[in-house]
Image 1: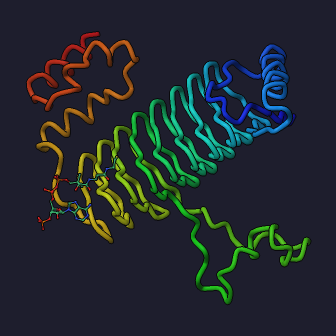
Image 2: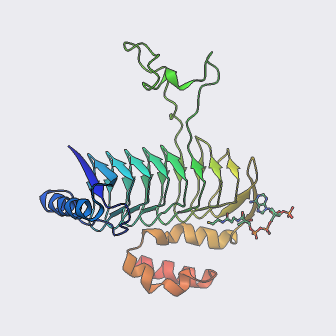
Amino acid sequence: MRIRLWTHPSSITPLTGTRGTPYKQQLKMRLQDACRAIGGKMANYEIIDSTVGLLCAIYQGARVKQSTLGEGCVVGNFSRVDYTELAHKTRIDRNNHIFQAKLGRFSYTGINTVIMHATIGDFTSISWNVSIGGADHDYQRMTQHSFLYSDHDGIRPPEQAIAYDRFTKPITIGSDVWIAAGAVITRGVTIGHGAAIGANAVITRDVEPYTIVVGAPAKAIKKRFSDEIIAALLELQWWNWPVEKIKQHYDLLANKPELSALQQLLRENKND
Ligand SMILES: CC(C)(COP(=O)(O)OP(=O)(O)OC[C@H]1O[C@@H](n2cnc3c(N)ncnc32)[C@H](O)[C@@H]1OP(=O)(O)O)[C@@H](O)C(=O)NCCC(=O)NCCS
């Protein structure tokens, strides 16, 4: 089913709710209001064959296609979210293209970011102008052009299957990772939990958990914490806690981790 939504171009109030009749009625009323308010001049956003959770905000010009959005997600102006799963409270900023990806809860992006065919954990912070998983054009063939796999150009004979899959190498990014502005993550890499990727870094190799990498090609410059603390954090996996537990331990999360406190928490968790 295809639902095309039209809203007032100057309205910044997002529509809320789920698919289904009540939601569609709400949208229809918005459409009528918008048409009255602007005398026919309209801007749009689209939700196509998708499931959109409660309290999601889809901003104008955005398109969500064959995707599943958990509760409270945001899709900013002119972003495209295609064939993607966004978990609870995921935020996609403006002018993003998210294609065949999976983002865990509370993860978010900045403006102008592109993510293709990647699995991203929870609470991961992705800045602006970041490129994750751009397609690998096969430079060993005579042409590198997209007509070998895209229908758009109309050159590939219709009876021919696509020449190759440009997304075969997987990308896995852990939880609580920070990817700074302008970073490029090439296909086939794994970035461990808690890693920090410096501005404009080009990631061509795996990044160990809690490691800070910079440059092109990126190299590790340091670890965020001592090996003992990293081991405890990887065991604790706070990003898997229920939100209530995260709130309860806010002070711990907001300060430099102390080994004794982490070990105490690990003991408590074992006794739970
Ligand atoms: C990676 C980063 C977090 C490291 O910060 P830091 O721990 O304070 O690092 P330092 O300033 O001590 O730098 C350590 C070394 O790495 C180099 N370096 C730091 N960041 C670099 C980067 N992005 N690219 C290349 N080299 C970098 C420094 O020049 C320094 O080299 P030197 O030892 O030869 O002098 C930071 O530099 C960075 O890239 N921040 C991104 C900010 C951003 O994009 N924010 C967007 C909003 S999310």
